[in-house]
Image (tube, rainbow over all chains, first blue to last red; front, side, top):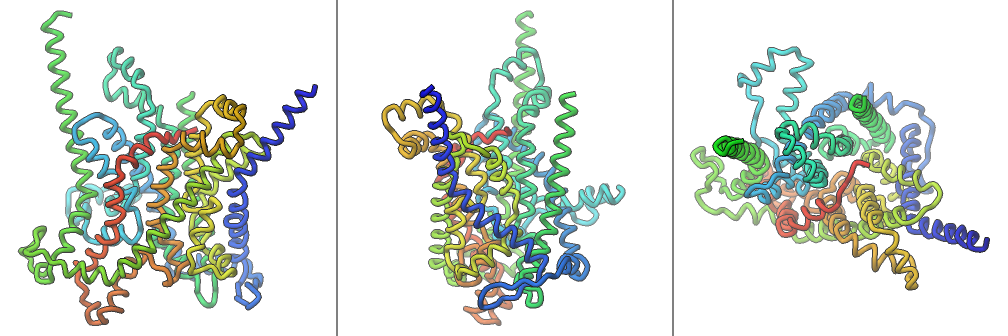
Length: 290
Length: 302
């Protein structure tokens, strides 16, 4: 009896210690994330005036959301182009980084050189540097009259416009795929070589091995990579919406509020895209099980 | 199978193997080119003299090594000053972030307490919160305590696990700390070690890969962070990337509006080289640690 009591007391003590270890995060979350989050909602729904004793809020309803969507001339356009960027670039990034990871997972001379080069985006992915690197110095795939463009222009616009968009931004999109390559590569190296050996004995081709072994093993990572990519692209500091938000922060007539409203609209859009991504993966997972 | 048959099969496989190899090299070289081209272009063109730039017969190989661009870029970036800022504003948050995420990851991995699952979900969910949503209210928060334009804007969130991509590092540490057997903890406790000693002497050394990963990536991500710091620091604290962002303006302030109107492309490129160089050097030097820490980390899909 005493022993049981001792056990439960020990458990309770351990629970407290566990909470103690995680407490820095909990405190930080309350102060630097949850509180600002609530304030952010308030700022977007109220007019903010700065008084010596602090900020003063007066209820404004959805005025700033309305302003962002209907009065601001550029915001809606930027929102559209950001959505386009996220939706078109993400699949490209995922497929691209998966291919690179599979290639880098093989043994060949010069592997470490290519690995160094292809991991570089992880290091240099900073807004100002990329924008100065990529203005005008990149390979142009979308010259008028090139074979690809002629082919694309003959297609209906709902197919051709994403393709043209991807081609126009291809190099930028490639720069977004550093961490994803890394995640996929780490996943590939976890697959036990004995599975491949067994498949070799059964006479499986490389193509079959890729679809039947490699892909199912790293499918869960694809979801992680997709979420990461969407978040990463939407946070890109040179993104037009993000520039809008930071430029309107000190907008004199709508101090803070317009920016807050804009950021919430953008956040809702990104979350919607993430929900669709999650739904698609869920669908694919269900189909595989069936 | 008869002997010649096996031989034929083997040679056919070998041929296919070589073809596959050539294809792989072809793809990899092509893709490396996509990344290296802008960098090569940048380095080469930053050495062009004004005469070379306008001369259409000169491309890729400058007629002379023209370092004046670097002198101007060095001054425009105010290099030593903004470099020191960058180092401080990346190194300190990286250290703080690593320390805190390790502690939190340890707490999550080795202890059972109520609402742990909820806490874990909330931690992962914070990764989805974009910086632009947090920026406005955080600015107001820091401003009300007169902390904007000070380094605390970066230090404090990092110290409390709310820094750049903290959730990822907590997850990595969590996975490291849950992977070693409980018996080790128990053995140490029987020997009289407390939880803190346990963390410092047993858990942390075992997670050295995670420590390296967290330090390196935090450093790089803080170095590249410009969106929040651009607003939070105004123009009081300038890091290298921030300085690069306003390069033309700074140039104008030093060399006058006339010179800035015709600012040579080479000077801007020299500035870009200078602001990438430190981090690129770090990468080249520590590239093995980078790669190994990633390969050990084992970010899995669970």
